[in-house]
Length: 284
Image 1 (cartoon, rainbow, N blue to C red):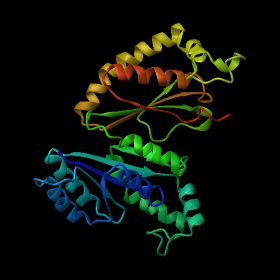
Image 2: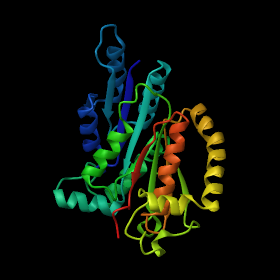
Image 3: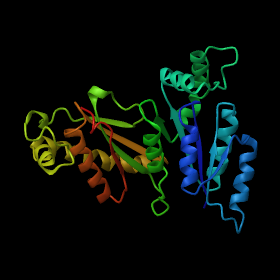
Image 4: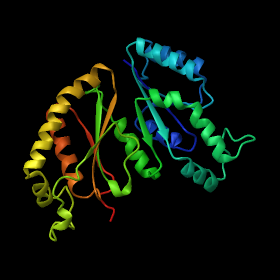
């Protein structure tokens, strides 16, 4: 079985960086190929003796969305694994990126840069809505984006089902824009107000014990277990390739980190291999 990935999204949001990551992981990456030729690549990959097992197409806004969706449906009917990654970012950040590189936006002919970006965003709306995973790169530097994509497309041939990621964050730094489910941990006792715990984080055992050793945390985790009993199999039946869970507290250093680590541990006991990241753990 051949794995297919489509890397798409707004110009300037990181498509080239994501493509480089997949190429480093051994994917056969093709950029700017007309959609009508993509099925032919699939046919070649499926031929006996082919050594191409993972193919990634990099697709911009110049591709026809209807043609692309039909092509993806055809690949899925061949029982191939197909994943679509959509890279997004705020218009202000995209404007700054283009101004800093002095590159011309592909849709900017006769348009101001901001208007061109919004025009492209509208054109890609349907593709974003149908993507398996959306990564918002507004707050990510190139190294963070590489790490995120590498985690999403890690060598998971042994476990081809749904891939789960768990992230902690601080509400004062903003809610992540590219997650599926958000859980608020601010009702738990805050280690920030304990002098000896304040410099530590949720990965340190004293903080972990302070957060998880409460009846509130025990009840919360029990409710999450019941929720996962329902939603994880249901998402799998629906064919969802990725599920991202976010846990937030005030600063993103203590409660959310401890809960995220514990949730990841419990997901592993279910046979999953969740990726874990702590977005704001190093922020003041």
